[in-house]
Each structure stands twice: as structure tokens, then as C-alpha cells.
Image 1 (cartoon, each protein chain N blue to C red):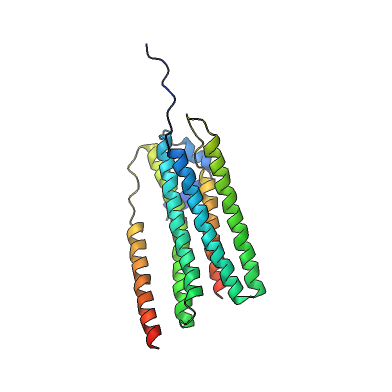
Image 2: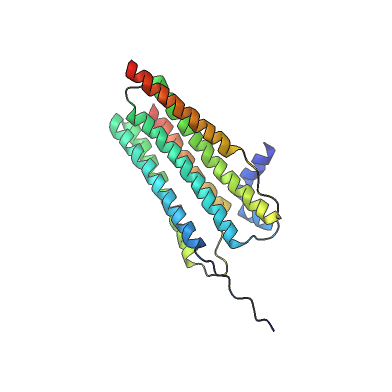
Length: 107
Length: 130
């Protein structure tokens, strides 16, 4: 009598998650820009090396966010791929490494 | 502490978390992901605050400046590590149908931020007098 259950409407959840990744990338950009400002202030070779590291970390986070956003956008309504712990750990490591770079820039 | 080590292992082993319990509603997983990202932004804001203390308070004594900056950066690291750990714990609790983990981390972070803010007020007042 009953047909197959209708596919679940994901609503705005994927979009909200996508925007959350965008906001986090933006926060990361602000922190990276502050790192560049610090290095321009001290103007040492070591400082610029640390800033290059910060730029790489920012690029890594951008890539992670982009891949996650792509996965959320291309998924069908039934079940989008979930965030894997590895992906989450990589994003966290980018953030923590940025803090370590910041501490290195202090000296 | 062994609980924490077990969680750390889970960060890098997505297949293990999938074997447990039932798959939760997709929307709950996404809400958990957004909470994780919000904590990551908090961590980034703390790190940005560390940069700002170093950059925009040049008149402070060196020890105060570096101490405050390191405190902010350290709490940023702590916040980001805790973000992924809490995400794993919530994901697992949802799979097992348990209550979400209780945590006193927000209270501790709130108190830490308040202490740093008071320290900044003291530093600015002392700096003006000196």
C-alpha cells in the first residue's frame, strides 16, 4: 500500500555547513594576514620563512575546505558524505600549526 | 587520559568510528560538523588575538607582551585540539544512542578569556602611568 519512503529533504543543512567552512576559511585568512604583518614588522629571514609556512598552512586549509564544500555540493539528497575524522584532524592540525608558527614569530 | 589516547586514534581511523552503533541522521552529523567548525573559529580568533597582542601593544614590557601572546596562542592550540576531540566524542555518542558528552571546557575557556581581559586592563592602566 505504501510506496517507498520519499527521499529525505536535506533542507538547508548542507548549505549552512558549506557557509560554516567558508567562515572558518575567512578566520584562517585573517590570522594568516596578521602573521604577514608581524613578519613585515620584524623583517628577518627567519620571520619570512615562518610566514611562508603560514601561507602553506592557509593553502592546506583552503584545500580542505574546498574539498569538503565540493563533497557537500555534489551529494544527492539521500545521504551526503559525512566529515571523516581524518579530514577534521587535518583541519585542526592546520589551526594548531598556525599557532605554533605564531609563537615562533614572537621571538 | 587513556580515553583521550583512544579518541586520538579515532581521529585518523574513520572506518573504526563507522563500525560502531547505528548511523545517525545526516542532519545531526552536519550540525556536529558546524559546531566543530565554530570551535575552530574560536581557536583561530584566539590565535589572531595572540598576533594582535604582539603587534599592536609595542609599548608593553617584553615579558608581559610575550606572556600574554603565548597564553592566547596556547589556548588557541588547546581549543582546536579539543574541537576535534569533542567532535569525535559527539559523533560516537550519537552512533551509540548515548547522551552527548558533558563538558566543562566552555566554562574554563570563558574564565581564561576573562582573566586575559582583566590582565589587559591592568597592563593598559599600568602602561599609561609608566
